[in-house]
Image (cartoon, rainbow, N blue to C red; front, side, top):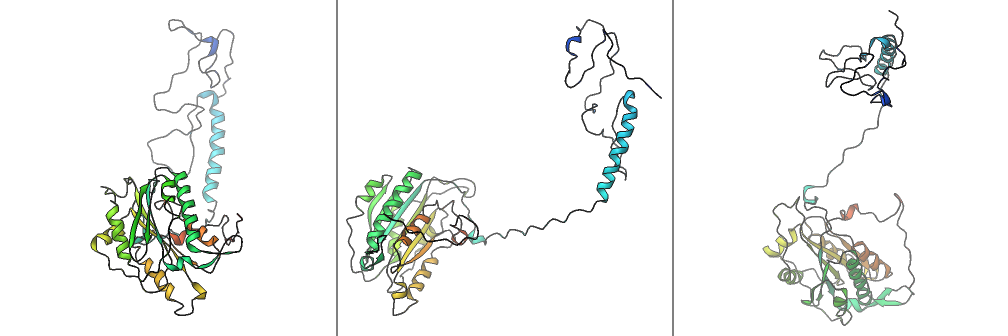
Length: 360
């Protein structure tokens, strides 16, 4: 049946369109009458012409994907053409073979004992710096920036000051303490958030001839000075602070004496306690028991049951910049850094890290 499209005659109300939703100047008052009877309004929830969606029905979908649109009589012929044109592409899309996507390999989670339990938050740190004062720290073996020989104690004092001042700039809530290690451990400077207070007693230290090193004695001194947080829900509630011990150790004779008590073992297992180590050894110059320093270095790994502590070994015969590099890698917050085996310090993937000498 052919019908003519009604045009906007003079005096008639202009149709409601998206650009003219209210009929513009042809709006009438609620008591007025219109010259033409408007089409019935659709019920609430039904589709309106021009929304670009198909009307939904309660009947189950048929095998042929056909999109049906409810339209008024003046546009029935156009709707029939639209239905036919939409059905063909949908059917063709069904017959089109799916492109094969490369399967993503599943992520292998770390072992249960290596999973982080505490939230990755930037809470304040209580950093305990433990400096070894054995005679090995006074040996003039390290190569400084200008090519001259220097000792490990001098370099350690400078890099500790740089570490403390940098951490203080990152977060002024961080606190620092200093412990010196001879035959026994001595708590030299209490927790302070002022880097100048710790550095004031850092440069008045001298090395001594030490016969042994008792790691348990060091941990007992730390245990008496700290109190670890106790949280009801470790996985969701951030701790008010974490405690990190940073040991700079340089002895290569004798094995570590370590028989921890229950209290020390509990402290080492706490998710809020970390024990980082920088071990200075003779390396290639050592003539007797070439692998003895490796045994000592491996014994520090036994202290870490969580897998979240960092350990570095540096040869006393190498450049001093290696010590600075290790200290810079320890600036990261222990709750936010990755496992040490996953850490990468190169800017581009696949690039080998290059040693860059700094000049001062």
